[in-house]
Each structure stands twice: as C-alpha cells, then as structure tokens.
Length: 144
Ligand SMILES: [Ca+2]
Ligand SMILES: [Ca+2]
Image 1 (cartoon, helix red, strand yellow):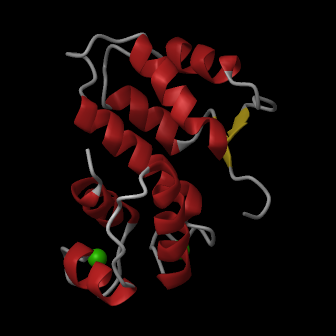
Image 2: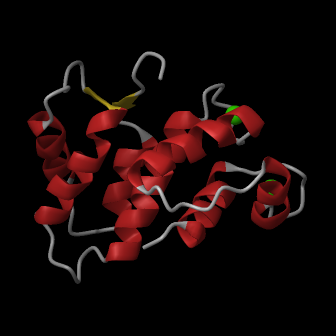
C-alpha cells in the first residue's frame, strides 16, 4: 500500500450516504467522521471507512439502512477512493487495487481478470467501466 487514501467529509460519498438514507442527517455523518482516529482537516483515512460505516449504521435501525445498502455504500467508497486518476472510470490497475483491497476484507472474493470484469460490468457497453457500473458489479460479486 502506498500513502493512505483519504476520504473527505464533504465528498460525494458522504452526500451519498445521506441521500440513500434520508434519516441520516449531515450532522450525524459529521459526528461519525469526527469520531474516527484518523480524522483531520475534514478527512479520514480509507482504513477507517469500515468503522465509519459501522458507526453510521449504529445510529440507524436495520430498516433505515439495510445490509445491501451498507455494502453498496462501502463499495462506492472503495471504488471512488481507488479511482486514482479521478477520471470516473476504473482501468485495469485500479481494478487490481480494488480487488486487492476487497480480498483483505473477504478472502473468498472471486478473483476475476480485468477482461471478464469489463464484459460483465459494462452495462451501457461503452467499453469502459464507470464507478457506478463497478459498484454494481462488486456488490453483486461480494460474498454477503
Ligand atoms: Ca480511473
Ligand atoms: Ca460503461
């Protein structure tokens, strides 16, 4: 691993966590961020993302945020964070980083090559895998 990836409190992801769950207020997201050990300058390390989600989930009932939604949010954070050149698409080296990261959390995650990934994940058939397409695919393939 290189220098740790940082997730910003005001990123799309944080907004996403809120829009997916209308009962989760900005204040709650902020408070969860501030509880993280690595919190500084409105950012946390990607390593704290799991804990952040657990903290957020803890403030909700199961009805408010179901397991799949948590998985989807977690995936979106991983995929968005690992889109290193920030072009909105997942290339081969980025794909490998995401898989490597998922394998840490879930050693049973299926190892798939990049070609297969593009074939399966590219739902609008433009030859590229966007962040949303990748999130869908990873969520479907994750052992939940
Ligand atoms: Ca990219
Ligand atoms: Ca596509």
